[in-house]
Image (cartoon, rainbow, N blue to C red; front, side, top):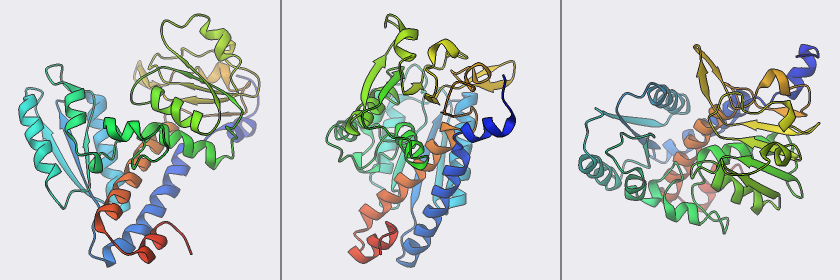
Length: 302
């Protein structure tokens, strides 16, 4: 890696910074909500002891505490049955004090993830995975956008990175990131190419991208030959190599070619959690039926 540290630092998309500003805004909104007797709350369900999931749940719990959101954590063994999980979700759906429900993925193999996501009430689906909420992305009126794609759009906005008319390439077509993000970028009038493991000439397509997003979970997949000079690179992947966290992008090889790039860790991850908190507060506002003037205050309107 060539170039001095100050030049590299200017290229970094600081997810922690953006997340901290979102959390501060959320905290201020919650102060106003609590004056109305409304305490935003989220239930987080963890089934099993997947090490990464344990970390993610802990990060979400800490973010909720920082913001002033009440977090209810439900932890169950990997042997927990699908029926029992569905019953727990139904119980939380009917609890008026719970505004958001999140089931940490992945789930044990004996549990159908699709069935679980569909069981969560759409108006408490703060992860943005329910089919009704995902479908509304097409018409830009979803109450809850999936957190990682939504966090990525916030990154682009924060750094005034234009999307309209740009070539955006997304490597990875998951229901959680790749697919919804493609629609969200198209809604912003980007030209989007969505690539998968069967796509031919991935390097050739990626190297033409103005904005390149990789969400494969394959460590250091993206080298300098994938990246156009001056491109913006968003790294959604996360892997553990010999105890060191890294992303899909070989940061050292790529950083000198890009105009902006997300680090791993400290890039997309913090935004995903912050947006989850934002969705929870939004759910509390929607469910509260509070008057228009309070809503305007909470939306930072005069």
